[in-house]
Image 1: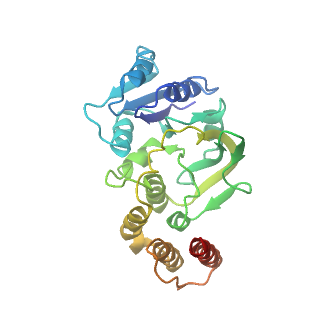
Image 2 (image 1 turned 60 degrees about the horizontal axis):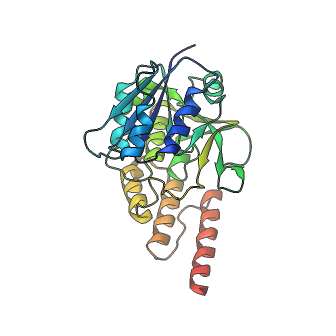
Image 3 (image 1 turned 90 degrees about the vertical axis):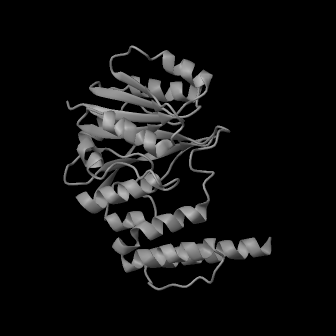
Length: 273
């Protein structure tokens, strides 16, 4: 059993952070290290962290100044000593079998694997993606994030692409997974649900406050040279909508036609209101 490095970055999550940490410590798979990078949190969160000091498999890194999630993630990655890497958001949690499922299903011919995940909206749990196991080409990640917010791969692969882009404020997961897939090939999403994304609480998720248009412009400008014609069309459609410009298709395929119709419908709804 190879060591898995699990990285949590945190800022002012308090008891939600405790839940996240405990969900890792309660894994069926036992050969792991948990690295928690705290981004100058308040006193209640510091007290939560204090309770885990001295646990051999837990490493707590307390940043000296507030630096942002991507810098903190890279600090964690560069401190990790495992064979494999995965992450956990501080307001989400693992189901007990997660690490075991990911380890057993990993295939090195794929750049990374991920699984479906459950979303907790406070009323019910539901799956994020429809359908079963799927294999994707890298280009798919230039349209939508078909991997979700966490993946599982060799730690050295994440280090090889220099981790997370510290200049991006949003879409950083999608950007990182795309760069992994560009370098190491197709990725696979397995038909399991071992991760729960909690959107039921009132606290804002890290990326919600970043302007959507600016984020998609940054992503498009960074990757347009490696995009297929279909992906360029898809991204230009999305940007035209966000910029309130004319919607035009330059590539007629399934993804683009579906997006075109969705955006036209949204625009009609906005105008009717």
